[in-house]
Structures are given as C-alpha cells and as structure tokens.
Image 1 (cartoon, helix red, strand yellow):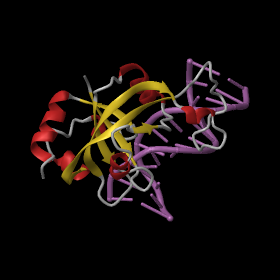
Image 2 (cartoon, chains in turn red, yellow, purple):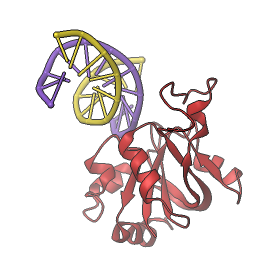
Image 3 (tube, chains in turn yellow, brown, purple):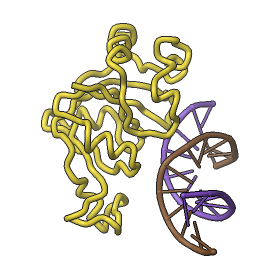
Length: 154
DNA sequence: GCCAACGTTGGC
DNA sequence: GCCAACGTTGGC
C-alpha cells in the first residue's frame, strides 16, 4: 500500500473528469517519462492512493485524491497511430509505456496550493518541491497523513 | 505565453 | 559514453 502524486493539466484532464468516469475508473495514459514509467510499472498496486495535482492553471496545487483500481498494463495509446501518445518504437511484444486505472476518491474543500506546500516545513521536502518535472511521484506516508489531516478539509 | 530547468536524442 | 542541441514541462 503506497501513496503517490499525479500531475495533470486540468484543461486536459481534471479531477472532475476522474469523478465523471465513476467507479470503473479512468485510464491514466500518456506517461512518457522513464522514471514515472518505472514507478507505474514496478510499484503501483490496486488500492494505492493518489494525490491529484493540477498544474499549469490558475490554482496550482493538490485538489483531491484518487485510488488505483487496476495495476500497470501496457498503455494502448503507444500503438495507436492516431493518438498523440503514439510511439513508433513501441511494439505489442516490447511495450515501452505503461498505465494504470484510477477512480475518484475525494475532493478537498479547497485546493492545497503549491505556494502553501512550499511554505509548510512539513511538506517542503516533498518530491514535488525537490524535483520539478516528474508527473508520477511517490508521497511519503507521513506526508499523506499530514495533508489529509491538515489540508483536505480546508 | 515566456522561459528556466531538465530529460532525451544522436553525432562523434 | 560524452555532451551539445533539441524538445517538453510547468511555475509564473
């Protein structure tokens, strides 16, 4: 049982889109970074919990949580020529990229802003702060618990 | 939309 | 296998 953070641009996929997908969940596709891929492929398990973080928008920060409902499988988009996530170097036998399915769990009463995370000594050691460009990243259990307690209810 | 930071590619 | 050029991420 692990904790994670997913970045997403809400103009593309938002927490609301995850919520709309319902209990069957939403495929988290299009991850095209090796470090993120390795986390997905090697460490994700059904039941893991995910902070959903909105990037490149007005209110940058964590807006809610989701839960993993399917562990890693090859991302079908890598073989789909019509997809923006198509990868000519990937094959059915040797897939390069993996995805998981998640479903909506909770929405924070107000977003936990990046500026707040950076200003909070309990959180400013998060991977999010340390390593700028990583769209799938681990969250420490103590960070998760602190965020839920301190920030999820506004 | 700008641009700094950083991951990836490819020539050598 | 180095590293310059290139492309992308993501805060602002």
